[in-house]
Image 1 (cartoon, rainbow, N blue to C red):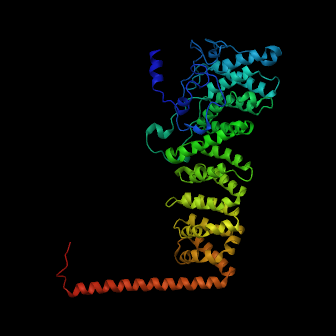
Image 2 (tube, rainbow, N blue to C red; image 1 turned 135 degrees about the vertical axis):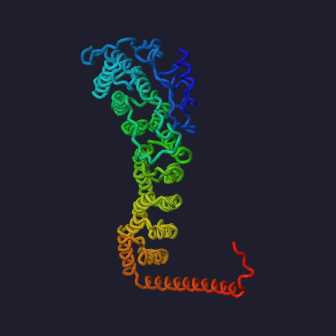
Image 3 (cartoon, one colour; image 1 turned 180 degrees about the vertical axis):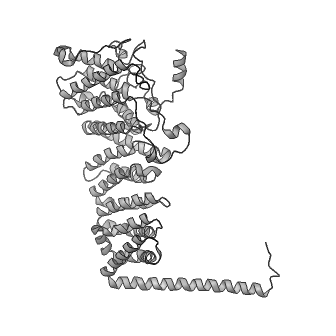
Amino acid sequence: MLKKIIKGSHRKPSKSDSNDPGSIFGYGQPVTRNSGSVSTANVVVNHASRAGPPPPPSPNSSGPGPISSMGLGPPPSGPVDPLPLFRDVPVSERQSLFIRKLQICSLQFDFSDTLKSAREKEIKRQSLMELVDFIQSGSGKITETCQEEMIRMVSVNVFRCLPPASHENTGQESADPEEEEPYLEPCWPHLQLVYELLLRYVVSSDTDTKVAKRYIDHSFVLKLLDLFDSEDPREREYLKTILHRIYGKFMVHRPFIRKAINNIFYRFIYETERHSGIGELLEILGSIINGFALPMKEEHKLFLVRALIPLHKPKPIAMYHQQLSYCITQFVEKDYKLADTVIRGLLKYWPVTNCQKEVLFLGELEEVLEATQSAEFQRCMVPLFRQIARCLNSSHFQVAERALFLWNNEHIVSLIAQNRSVILPIIFEALEKNIQSHWNQAVHGLTVNVRKMFLEMDAELFDECQRQHAEREARAREMDEQRELTWKKLADVAAQRGGEDMITV
């Protein structure tokens, strides 16, 4: 008992715990859940915390388990015996059998040793499979009590302490997250079936949202969001599907879910820059954004400006850039007037020394420009093509090459053609510099093609830009010659004085 007290005293409580003491289903004292008990104005998602509640009792422990706290009797102690199949009992007894199976499935086992409690683990796995089949078949509508106990069983299994990430073990900055081996949850054979059961319950046509929202409440959703920081990609995939289905079915939770995801992004951007599930959350949001009604609400535009665009700042953007780019493009396709805001946001976070990140930005920029109309393009074209000119002259050939590929896009070429009198003077010097001195032959060839395109587009403008460039080059040479002459005069004066006034160091 003393060891348990000491062990429990070292647990770091998550913010979800501190906001809702005792509300973790199956632990501590029972509480009355209310879907309106958590205010959306004060959502705090402790997604980066890997602390969690202590595990529920093992099959050999005495004392009340997670179900006994609700007065349904303690879970089996000692040996666990398999229960009969649903089809082998009368219809009138199936709800009772359902709860007894939930009791068995609420037991927790040690998966660090595959041989330990092997029989009991297999009984629990079979029970979970039967529960999944029972819900999926729709052979009988489960009662409210059964629904509540099922959500409690799910909570006991999935809401747990996540293992420390690799960088947390050493206290050092980790290597590239893409190169790290993901941690695979050893209890996945059970965990997968629990998630499958929850998914089948949420999508079932027999599930009444008015009843289910009492159990799948704000607290439950927050804890699901905490689990997105799991390193196991299989778990994150299930969480993504389940949360998306909850968002679609429980309309009352939609603003709360959006705000909670916002808070995860804020903490990731401005505090930790570490989170395993940003890509999955963005996938959910991509589908949500696609369903936004027009005209777009101010709340959604603020989400774009305050959360999505700043997500270009963190170092591990490569982990989720594809999903982020899709969300950004969805906004511009929904409301073309947002193109100027998005492009200026990209320029604000444009990388200076990270070439791979620059290539990603150029790819996203092309997608955004494809959905951009002429009026919005004209608002941002000057700072945009100043940045593109710098990319054209990049010594990293992939950056220069990706920037030149913009001229392969017909829509972008048409926008450039309409505004060539502004754009060509900005990038002409960069094109000439590439032709004269860029080390990469592919970049040199692409630059020649772009230069030729401008010449065919407007020969008179091209000649004028060439004349101005020649004048600038002549002035630069003249200044260099003047500088050299001044230094020569200084050297001559010093020589005439014989060095008598000079101090040698």
